[in-house]
Length: 616
Image 1: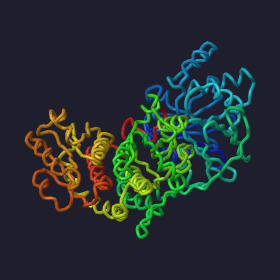
Image 2: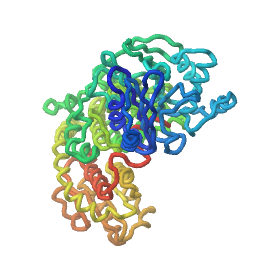
Image 3: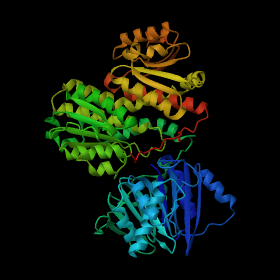
Image 4: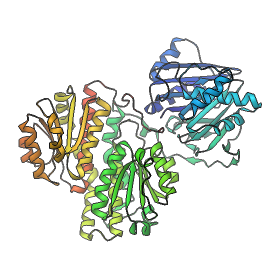
C-alpha cells in the first residue's frame, strides 16, 4: 500500500522524486524518505509525516542535493509504528545497499533470526530492513553481483513486494523486482522512471512497462532495459505500451480536494463507461468479454462476486441486478473471507472480481483460487494493464480515469454502470428479460449522466444540512432493496473521511436492534425514493420520529409524504428502481464530503487509510 518511486537518467533526481512522492501520497502518508546518489555516496533523508514534512526537513538542511539517480518512498505502516527510523529507504549494515519496498515479507522474522546469528543488527522494526540485510548477506557470502544477490534473496522470501535497490558504489544501476505489489516502469531515451503507478512520471513519458509477478529488471545508465524472471534468471523481451492518461486527469484544477472533483466528474465518467457499449437507438449493448463467452454466461450454474470495501458494496448492487434482470443465482463475498473458507466452486460457475485499482491483494488471491477451482473469472477494474486485468479470463474496464481521493466515488458509480450493462446483456442472452423492459432500461441508463448532473445541484442544500450535523458522534443510514447497499456505502464514506461513527442497515432491520440508539441526537439518513417499498419506508420514518430522531431523506422530485415528515429533504430525479443507486449515492457522497470539510479534515488523505490495499 506504500508508494515507491525512482529515477535513473540525466536529469536532477530530487525534483522528480519529491514531486512524484506528492502524487503517490494517496498510497500512504505515515512517513516518507528519499535517497539521492552521487559517485560513491548518497544523501538520505526521511521523516515521519507527509511529504511536505520531508520537503521542509530537506530545505532546512540548506544543502543543494545533486545526483541523477534516486529512490523515494511514502509509507503506509505495516511492520513498525510511523516514525523516522521505520521510514524508508532502509540501509544495510554496511551502508552499501539502500532499498525501498511496498508489500509484506511474511517470513521476515525467521530471516531476521538467521541474520542476527550472523552478526547483523537492526535499527527499525520493519520487514524491509530485514530484506535489505538478507540481500547484503547473500551478496557477500557468495560474492555475487547486486542483481544476482537480489534474485537469490527473493527466491528465499515469502510474501509480496515491489522493490528498488541501489548499491552505493554503483549509482549508475538500480535493480527492481515485483511479486504481488504493483510496479510500473517509465522509459525514455537515456532515462528510466520507477513508480507504484504511472501517475508520477506521466509528464515525462507515456512509454511504460508494467512488471509482472516474478519479474525483475536491471536498469543501467545509457543501457537498454534488462528484464528477467526471478526464479531462473531467464531473460525476457519487454513489452512497452503507450499510456492513455493525461495530466489534466490527475490535477485538482479549481477544486480544493480530489474527492470533490471526482464526485463532480461522475456525469462524464458514467458516460465514458457507457460510450461504445450502449447503443440506445439500436437497443444494443456491446461487451466483448460477454459476447465472446456467450455460452459460458447462458449455461452458468451461478455467479459469485468477490470484492473489498466500496467495490463490495457495488457487488451487492450487482447481486440485485443480476438476479432481477438475468435470473441467475448470485452470492457476494468479501475477498478476504472467500480465499480462506474453501468455497464451493464448480466448472460451470462464474466468479466476477471487482477492484478499482486491479491490484487489491485479497481480490487477486481470490481470483487465483477461483481459477484453480475451474471457474470462469470475469474482472471489472479501472486500471488498464493491472494485475487483475491480466489474470482474468475476460473483463470490462470502467473508464473512470485516475481516482486519487482515497475515498472512492466515481469508481463506485462506474462499477455499478458496468454491472447494469452486464445484467442487461446476460439477461438478454438468457431470455430472462422482455424486449420492452430491456429497451426501456437501456433508455433510462442513457439518461443517467444528465440525472447525476441534476442531483449535483443539491450541493448547496447538502452544505446547509452538514452545518447542522457536523458535530454529532453517530449517524444511521437506512435503505431498502437495491438501495440498502447504497446506505452501506453512504455510512462508509462518512466514516472514512469525517471519523464519525456511522452504520448502514436495511430499513426494516432497524427495529431489530438499531432503534435502541434513536434519540434527539441521532440523525438518520434514509433513502426514500418512490420505488421500492415506499409505504414501508414511511412506516420506518414514523417509528424514528416517534423517538425524536432527526430525518435526512433522499426523495424523488415532487415527493409529498416523506417531505412532510422529514427534518431535511434532498431531491433526486425520478429513475427506475434498478438504476436508482447511480443517483441516490450522489447526495451521500456530498454529505460525507461537506461534513468532513466543515470539520477541517484532510478529505483526500484520511488517517490510517490508503487508496490501494496491496497487502493482506
